Structure formats: C-alpha cells, structure tokens
Image (cartoon, rainbow, N blue to C red; front, top):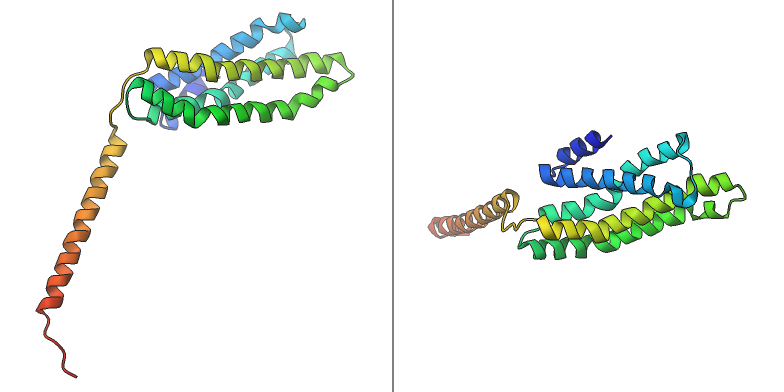
Length: 187
C-alpha cells in the first residue's frame, strides 16, 4: 500500500521527492500507531491490523496538502515553507477536528472493545497525523527543502500572457489602421 501512495502521488503531479516524503510520513504514522498500541493495552490482532492499514490512507489527508503547497510555492526554502503552512495549517487542523467529531461518540460506548479498538486507534491516528503534518513535516521541509525561484508552469503561463497581450495590442493597431484607410460612406 506504500507503493500505491507513492505512485498516486506521482500521478497527481508531485515530484519524486515529494512522493517519497508523503510515503515516508504514511509509514511513520503506521509505526507510531503500532508503537502506541500498548498505551491502550490493545493486542495486535486482525482489527488492529486493519486499523493500521487504514492509517496509511488517512495519513495522506494530513501530509499531502502541505507537501503539495510547498512543492508548488516559489521563493527561498523558508518563504516556501511559510507560504505552504499559512495555506494548509488551518485546513489540516479543521480536517483533524472534523475526523475527531466523526468518531468521538465511540468514547462513550459501554463496550470496552469498541472504545479500545475503534476510538483509541482512531484518536491516535488523528493525534499523530496532526503532529506529523504540523510539527515534523515543516521541520523536514525546513531542513531539506530547496529554494525554487520559478517553475516551467509559471514561466510558460507568463510567456503565454505576454504573447496574448502583445497580440491584443497588434490586433487593436491593425484595426485602427483599417478604420483609417476605409473611405467614408456618404449617405
């Protein structure tokens, strides 16, 4: 499933490095949740394994947006990081909160099994996913991210805009010249 996360990240336009970062944090969340199972006295069995596999998919919710924002931002490493986090920190927090609100009712269950194997694992996924996205990911990008002054998309679209404005000016000048050359119509 890590390979699928990597390939899909590549397919949506991420670079190799960004896809690797997203896959790394998917693995990290899975390991963090697995390592914290003992906090809730949860035995490693089929339901816990299913939840760990689910955490791989959910981890993308937390990490992909900040990585994408960093990937497509322009400037120095710190400017790109500032821009990416200012655009995605609040949505990541809102996503974590909405996920929590979706399963928080499980904490009130009378069945300890539901509380341990559903609520606790989902809570750990949300907590660790949010920490990864808002604390560890910016640290990694701040240390290892590169400066990016311009990219092919922005360069090609600005050239296209320049051509378009030049064409408009030329077309307007040609139209004015034609209007001046036509004889006046007598009525």
